[in-house]
Image (tube, rainbow, N blue to C red; front, side, top):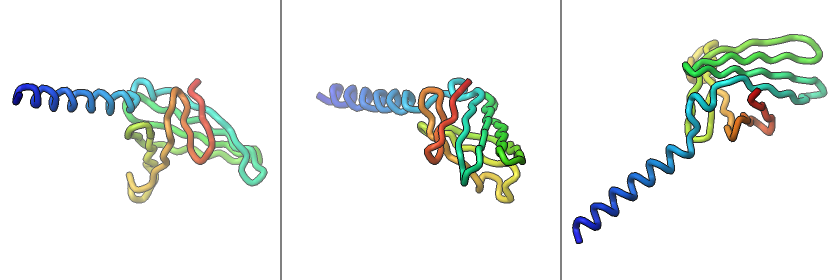
Length: 116
């Protein structure tokens, strides 16, 4: 009876670990180039995000009315979220952008960026 309870408990732990692991994409799966565009206050915004397997990123944003910006930093994966930490933030790792990840698509505030 004791052996059955211990075996059942261990099996439950293994299943939980497998379930949690299956929910999180790997660094290799997430790494790549993502592009997308959207309109903001009548302006056309184009975004390119490059996520590297070493956990660093580059994000380039250009506006149709002129002007571009580049952001660099590192990122982490938490569950199905990819969190970008801007290295220019005065409190590094205090300023972040969170994207939901699903099958090659990053989504933030209703804007989708597709993996090329």
